Image (tube, rainbow over all chains, first blue to last red; front, side, top):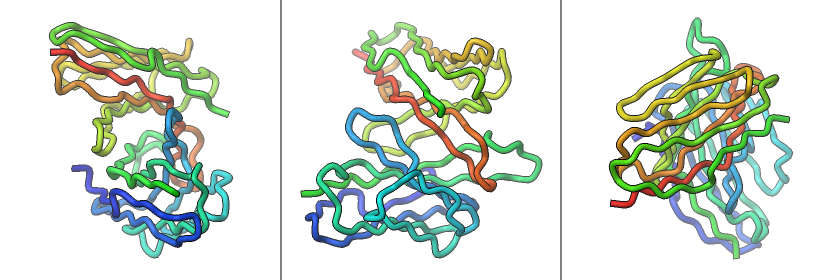
Length: 118
Length: 115
């Protein structure tokens, strides 16, 4: 396995529900990411956190609210989602080591949470 | 805006045959290129990171080449086996965002090996 776990693996929720996705990395990485994959579309970056600070919000609607309490954990809080938000949500982490040129780091992915919004 | 194109979208290959597919990108925006292998219901698994024009990387029966001047990378699989069935993703690194990397993915090539 990659050292990145995600729970739950499957989630069904109504449009008025509030739920949270959890990601945990056991690799000691400093950066964590949320990606979304909708049907027949590429993986799309949603949020980036570096040392617990959000550094990127890729124009994601406010009904998706990320939280990064520490470098090992990342949450995605979901509230009043729409059926078109049904997708696979993937978490990833990476580490920029000393002497490594930025942009070449490998991102390690979790297996994803398959979300269905009814 | 980075745009990463992969072709073909899907591919069926007979076991034992060799195959290859393409990742195209705007050459002016190149920084690093990543190949991932993604089996159904599992995590995407990193295969290669490539940065230099003319780079060639190899991992077992899988290899990749990179041409940054013309904006493409090829992934080759020699002697395909059923366990090679997966979606192969190509991703480009853009600029760093405060120390964290930003990947732009292609749509993937879904490879099926027929026994």
